[in-house]
Image (cartoon, rainbow, N blue to C red; front, side, top):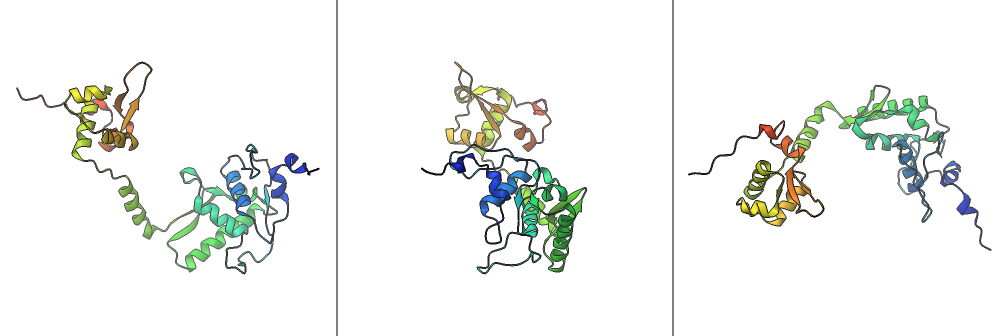
Length: 247
């Protein structure tokens, strides 16, 4: 008869066990990240439902004093330092600092003070190696960010990512919808804007138009808050008055 004890065990049991071969598997590291982000800890058992993270320590790591050791195959060894570095690299939503207490709660046998020491160690190493990024103390926690001299490059990339290139057909659609919304596809044609379906779909994907589908009614297009932001309008009331057709 097959051993059925596995089905009654919790995924957290595996996390509490000593690490194999002096390190953590990718699955265990993923579970640590899930705990840090406050989400459910994924269960790698097929067809098993997700299990909410339990309070207290979640995983046990290699407590070897040589935290920077590298495995024989050249891969990076999972240790408190490398886990902290990975967490700082990913970061929390909104740039929220990662507190040492929060990280320590995920690593069995590691105290918050040790996390602070490791963060300070990373900060010193990055500075000595003149890396373009740094680890800094912010409020009650730590964040990884670009150094001031490199921040301008990030601003340029961010600005370019916000750039929206619109051809004349797209501009015609936006103008027609803005002044006549909500407006159905057939009504757009009546107003002289016979845009291609692909153009309408693209504007919806870019978040500039919203397609509303109501029961027993033809779908209609309307502009979105992103449209107002793109054209620097506080509201649709700020739209200029359309030019009257020549008489």
